[in-house]
Length: 252
Image (cartoon, rainbow, N blue to C red):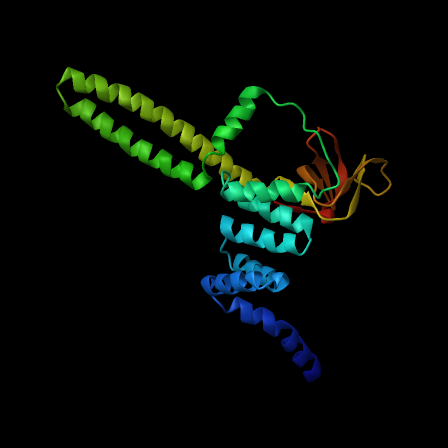
């Protein structure tokens, strides 16, 4: 029993050592290890930072880079996608994500999207959820100021100006809060995932006896529409649907 305990302590000691360090220390160590080409050790420290509950676009981006250097394309794409959710307009994240996707076997043509829907998504991605929330907050404060001026001033020109301003700021508030909530729900619901299994047979039903509809490969992004036991129904960019084992993917 004592020998078994010693083995457990020996195996877990490195993990406990990482967890005992604060995120800034781990980040510094991880960056240094990455620079020196020790990508596996760097990835372990980035993962430890995330394991402590500290997440940011930078951590996910760096972790994605470490996995990319280790040629673990699915893990790289997963973390680039997570970084992209937090910082959707970061050009470095988007460039590396696009680069990693070129290594994925499946080249799926997405269904054509209504132009206004595409424009709305592009507009929403200008800022992160938090930034949109800040914009909404300040717009709301300015609306209150404009309303106060409208109520307490007797000058017609100021009333007209503050009325028009309050209408405009209310529109900004509604748009901003809508974008913030939409992006927040997207990150909370986590209904997109990356396949990790090298080859995935997509079934017609949630059972191993179901017919094979099509084949997917590691690194492909899917939408998880529902789950049933150990199976999940997925949808890919071209609209095709089917069932896969939930163990074959990891949610973004």
